Length: 557
Image (tube, rainbow, N blue to C red; front, side, top):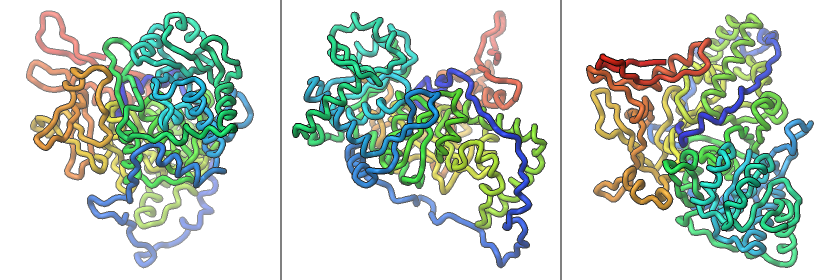
């Protein structure tokens, strides 16, 4: 899935995966492997869906609609697992009830104590409990959320605050120095609210915990006005910047209906319930993580583990046993390579390969024993892993197939910030490794001016498509066109094709195409994917270079 322009750069350090030496001594004791199967014992397993059918989808129009349903249905269930310090022994568990109390308190204080109702408010910082509370409080009535990348330098943070006309900034303690540096350059900002801080209001600075306490006092005294705010599904509620905050970046305006339609779309293709646990490793300022990694589990009553950093990823997986991992290809490929390295070190390559073939045959006949056979591998990633979702870029098909052979449901998807973000996603009942996903229900993706291979620019028309670019009508008109029926189509800039079953395949980007002298189109992404499968190559980039005194273009590394 392609989400924005910078999601691939989220891995600032190498993820640390730790695995024990494999023994696989239990395989001979698995009863299902001892049985002599005949045709009478097994019948081919098929999903119950006919072409075009899917799970019953939800029909939410706003975030508040499913928010209220979930907090009423699952008050005592754990929602967020986080730590105040990555080195703490145990995760703190925040229930839906506690989360709701803090959301109401923050929303009440922002609207009635600090007079910020309907104002634009920047949220910037690493993934943490306060980030989740802030985002929901804004979406269900307090104001307009402006999620910002914490990795931006001071001048670009200042730029986005100015461009968005934000009147408040909720920020992480880790970037306090950056905020302090630019405060004097932002006189229009009324308040700077520091997460995990108890500081009393002093000038324009105040602690997040103090704001929560003030909101609780207002509610205690009978102020219920925040939860009474009615949400217009089509009202501008979130502003995402496509890449950085330079003059070239664009602000994407999104409303409640478009965000809620992400949940509706996924519900038709993937059967997720309250027993799932998501593992949050991608940054929340991206639409993908804030929607599918946050709003989706909120909608179904599932829980979320906040990864404490890539150096702690292995420990965090084992500590909290998540069932859903959403990640970029680099992380999933790194995990795969580490597992394979451990398998080779344990001299278990042949037995693992053999058991994958045997268990695949059995699974085709309705007998799934993969979790029993590969229990040691599952234990290394928490023991409950059920879904892995690859986002941001193509992944080596070999890696996706290996996870599938292991017994994990491997999903991919496709979308951009402008589609907020889901346009296509793999149905869990019809997985197809190599595809970027199937066009979401009530959506269409078509190929513009296809070549002889059926490839061309992908045009997207979905109910998740953005309202438009913030204060940039000209740029909006450049990427969105209307057909004769009045349907909006977004020019994605991606090259690919769509098969007869509406599965999408991405082959490159328009801006990246290398055209040789004989008119041959070369997509660097395809070559990079092949090169990255070589173990000795950690990172690579293919680009076109015109050689002096020669008219042809060379491909270079």
